[in-house]
Image 1: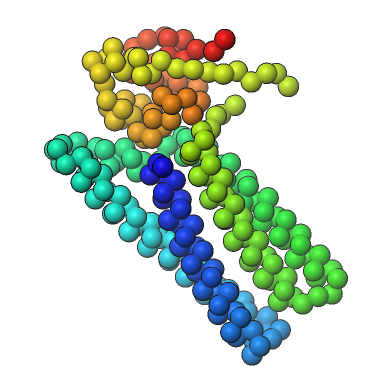
Image 2: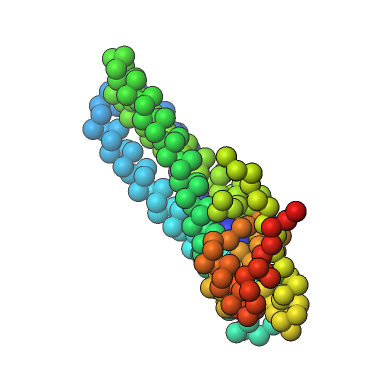
Length: 161
Length: 71
């Protein structure tokens, strides 16, 4: 499996861990918070912030570990060559941008479907808190789908055509 | 919709004849990551026209010598 696939999996695991944490939190506070939309919005904002921070930290740790791994693997080569290898592995280029475009499209479709589902919930007069969570969940599913699409294209290949 | 063309490349062979140029050297000269060169050689990536020309420039050959349409 390539470095980029592993990096995507690392980000996915970080986002999943925060989402699971939120679900555990939500299940515990739901009876007390009820339909207080403001409290849920604050909880979701905190969760999104935590998710961003977690993904950044995981990316930094992953890059450090990957660099060490490359250096150890190429133990026989000099520092300059190891540096070039690390740079060449981590660098993003047109293939990454192409895959990002495809994964972003998949994410957008999932998030859009979730938004429509949330509107439907509101149209039927159901809870706004439920609609809020459907939107949040759909964005997370969109992110998950996008990551899976990225890994698929990194492993199976991609074409500009 | 027209039938999709299967485009192959001779990058591995051209690297061999370029004094066994490494994938890292080629990636550096073409301005892409090593993984993209790996994907190209494995037939898992069809590059943009710009990258195709850059690769041809690195080997100092015509683009048709780097990329071919498979029969």
